[in-house]
Image (cartoon, rainbow over all chains, first blue to last red; front, side):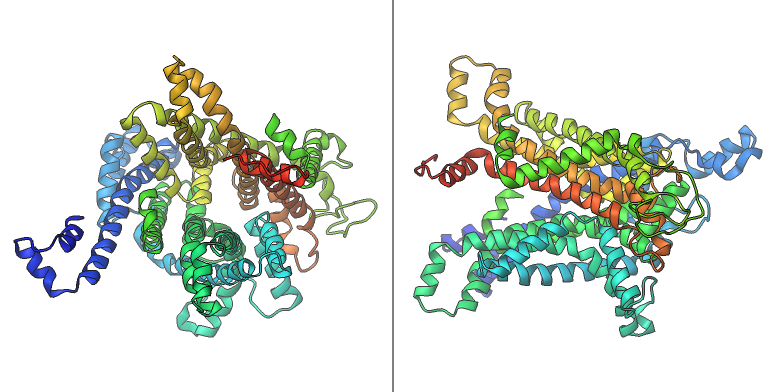
Length: 349
Length: 288
């Protein structure tokens, strides 16, 4: 892929590629090519990760001592019945073959069906995905906004009362388990000042205001941990950046202060915060199980939990697979974003 | 050892160590101190804190203080178990990945990446539930998921020191790989490892309390810190102070671990030593 860049600088090279490149302006093409390369690299890394993590997930089913055939048939099944049932479930084939088959079908949207209810796993996940996604995306937005604002303010006012307050609050938030945050929010906003519902879920079609009111407490309680981490990393990153020579240079050139902070310092100091945000994404998706339980939300987390406690292996595997997929997609996006922010990060992926 | 004694000389480090020692002591001898039978019901349900019941009583009239004390070992030692598993499964491949060739390195890197992609809580719940609902199994899962954390930092440290010039020099003098590991690499990794272990233990405690809160890995009447919080959840409107004491205990322990980690990080390594020297009024030393 680097050939594109080389040709840009190397002058006329014979061939159709240069002719096509000539129609575009050089910098634009280079920028597009860079993004594509970054995306390609990130995807190349994601594929083995996907294989490893899905294999571990599939092995969960292999490790369980529960046999679906005897589970479904109960005590009344004869050995012949059990053997027939095992064939129906495909349990007579070797593990590796079953894994490849499962992955192949999963990539085509078929996750099998529940051992107990016979409902297709993909269908139950599709029902619950909007709930989990809206909570996770909402929490991500709140984390970015809260963490961003307070991180930047703390970095700009280094050593001031705001900086110290932010430091104390972020340290305390890091020690609070997610369910305690959730309980505290319910106690305050549903019991003492009953303005928000303490749990449950309505679809957005029931009215945006109502949807938001049900969504607000879960998203806030899920986001606080990530927001604290983002604020802390952003403060550290930007505090260092603000002392760099090019910041002084920008001040000498007479640029307005907010522009120096928001464009020059933020771009170079945001790397650690973005990386930390990327590490929080699995927790926002997977850790939502706590929030979903406390607020009685019908999301993927509670689906996985209930299925796991009931021993419903296909549902657990399918839900984990979808979660892993979401995590990988977001980590690819974060890596591309990091490269865009700071080209030197390409070497660190 | 030097890494820890240095941290104890700072005020934050000492406070954290005292809190942790108190929690550990309570965990070890706490079950013996419990004033009531932690499983015994009584008619005095949902009592506020009083002289007879310091932490109040829960919805079945059980003494919360006794339950918190009895639940200590389950809540704290399980976290240690997970961190121990993670430490071994992360540090060993982390160091060996630098020495055992590129194929091995590539495989460990990809496996660790795969582990990072697994959603922590859900995976732990799935393992605990599918392998028979027991907290030991859950800790195996949590330990495996903590491994990448240790893998990354030991690998980074081993990588940066394995190729340092003084290591090459000692190898030229005939030092074996084992000697280099033991004397040079290990002493450089140790402070980072201690910091990460403290942070991971804090994380482990949070995860254990979350799992027990969800009712995964424990059989109901048995008290755990997370489980005590969950049991009174439906009675928040009558007794909003119910979850306060176990929650404070969890937060104090986690906070102390994080504080200790920060203190160790600040006092070990070049940066920390320079800062301490400056604080004592010594001349600034150029350690670069």
